[in-house]
Amino acid sequence: MNTPERTLNVPHADCLFIAGQWRKPSTPQTFAVLDCATEEVVARVARAENEDVAAAVAAARQAFDHGPWPRLTPQERAVYLEKIAERLEALNDDFARIWTVESGVLYRIAQPRVGQYLSGAFRQYAAMAQTYPFIEPLKSLSGHQAYRVQEAVGVAVAIVPWNGPAGLIAYKVAPALLAGCTVIIKNSPEAPCSGHLFAQICEEVGLPPGVVNMLTAERDVSEALVSHPDVDKITFTGSTAAGRRIGAVAAERVARVTLELGGKSPAVVLDDYDIETAAKALGTPYFSYLSGQVCASLTRIIVPRAKHDAMVEALVGAAREAVPGDPFAADTSMGPLASQRQRDAVERLVAQSIADGAQLATGGGRPRHLRRGFFFEPTVLAHVDNRSFAARHEFFGPVLSVIAADNEAHAIEMANDSLFGLNAAVFTQDPERAMQVARQLRAGTVGHNASRYDFSIGFGGFKQSGIGREGGQGGLEAFLETKTVVLDRPAG
Image 1 (tube, helix red, strand yellow):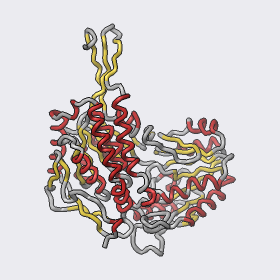
Image 2 (cartoon, one colour):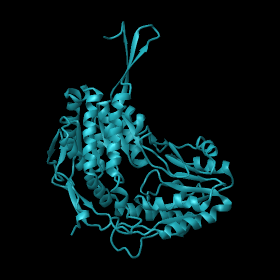
Image 3 (tube, helix red, strand yellow):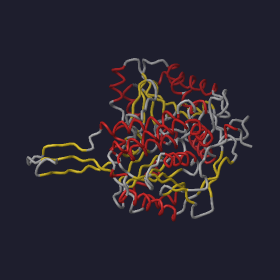
């Protein structure tokens, strides 16, 4: 039986939200939502099929082509964003409990701030309605009056991952709405409940019908969204493999894409930095926050060769201090993975890493005292070659690899020797040295002495970590098209 904290607020779980209404799907089949700490079913949500996808796209297309939303001023749209922000804050605890149950984040991490984080995205973009130059007067080379006009790209599909669904909904939908787009949110089957709660908010604040639509679908049905000719833009967060497929399908009709994909991010620890201090910044927070199920995690720890063993020892200490267990419990410092599939994948990747030569320093399996839930031990791999399996593959779980470098130049070379380029960090006492190294790292974000990515500024990666940026001004521009207008004389 569900305890009160595990009872989730999932409005209209048996429906999809299309054209401003809660509609029964075309199939009676549902998705079972599991509590990842107990493996119990906590909700069943409506499952969309191709017919439902077509209805959602038609609603969004109608709302964009003929509805009032794109024709409002940015300032008028911002009023709705502020109303959404207020409701997100009011439902803070509901979003926190959903995130904990579905994805395994510690409740004490989620509960104090998830609503503020979500509302912060909407308030940031609401403020941009006053500051962003949607219409900018310029002088043409011909001497005529010109204008650079920023207009909505059109119908946008937001494909949301299972590890942080509410946050990604906020940073995809808020800029899309300010731009004047209409949106279809596609939830992950593993974590759809935040999408239902957000759709209820859109209904409550009175968004015009079809401006925001919400459904949950399997990956094969999702391809119908990506390939639909009436969809102008796809914003996707997930694996690089899925991103490649989405990019290829979208390219067939030159649809716009933002792809925030995988990572195998390096932490470069320079010779002037204390190993114990670095280990505390890299080990404990990593194991505690979503059990490593974060694309931006600093999982390749590159240290001077003489300090390799000390770093391994310090990280092993952090791992052994971790307390896996119920993410709602006050004494738990590490929750479960989100699903059996994810735990199986991490187990397989660790086994392959050891077979490829990595040394298991600690962890590597399931905690023996936890018989239910998708738990995996905090794991440290030592003597990892930067060209080996462990260093090349994203685990998306609580596994850290320690890599020895001959010198600073070698450390930078290895940090960049990756298919990915999402996040990085430099550990040094010297800010100028940190800046010099940061400028040499091929990553979308580089932090100093910690992981410091910031969606309010912009988040995204180099290389196969994605295309485009989410958050900040770049996140808004991802939903805009630039139009040049040249007039004989200035407009009134």
